[in-house]
Image 1 (tube, rainbow, N blue to C red):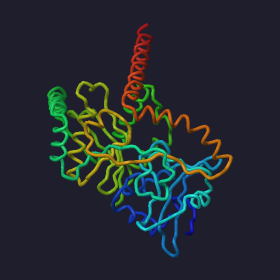
Image 2: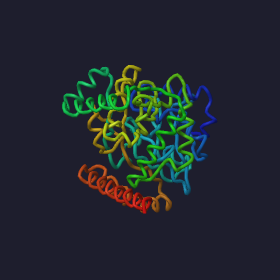
Image 3: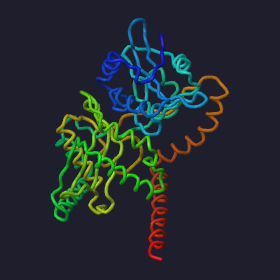
Image 4: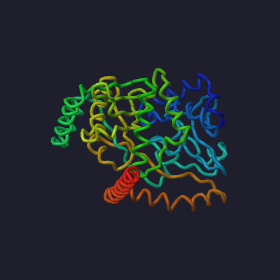
Length: 365
């Protein structure tokens, strides 16, 4: 096996075609593993590289990664993406230790490794579900599945949709919008949510905003940044920005206008997203790992993703393990236990409520 490491913008047309050919079906078809996504991240983050694996005269794999200080490696855009791994030919085999040496890495850490990465399997420390909306049977079948799970949930949600239309104008849905103002509005709603719930605001980071704007303008035969907007009359009330690759849509940034909260606009958006996505040839929507209640409402099945790290024997890798392992274990314990997750979420919401009241008192004093 020969492994060369290049910048994403050094990939040729034949490399990109080969990469896409490996993504026809299965977990590797995920939008976050598409070359268009890696190219977009590479334009904004100079540490992004791609290892190209060649077996004789044949290219058999592409491994996108970021290389940080002291050889610490991650997938591109760490913390933002829901699919990690090496995109490869069906018969490809590789040595993870050789791969890390070629990439100049002492550690490669992952938290959303997709299935089918057999050489990496022994490095997995945890396997968790990532809920999926399965639209392969069409929207009617999906809706029937949601109704069978909870008739009252669907009836109440559709009632709220009718109320929204009566109170604020006809409810409409757009999939595949290309309006940068709509994207900025969704980012603003999401920033407000992050701040309101005491979570880190990703959109205070300039390169993340630039990445989404770049992806909104990206469109190839198989890949596109996909924006959807729910409106009442002429007013946007909810939206989502994700990535599409073929028939797969990766859920990424859903958001809504909190002024319309009583109509459950986020849930309405998800239901209408399923309807319009199915009509447009999308067969699955990956909602991402995490024990959030709305995901259970729409979950059809699960993808399985893994967490872990590949470590070369070195002092740097040992220091990294000592710093990261206790935090990782505590976070996973909370995320994977619904009771702890609800308790932590409730605590954050209560803190946010107190913060909002104090701010309002300060404004009226």
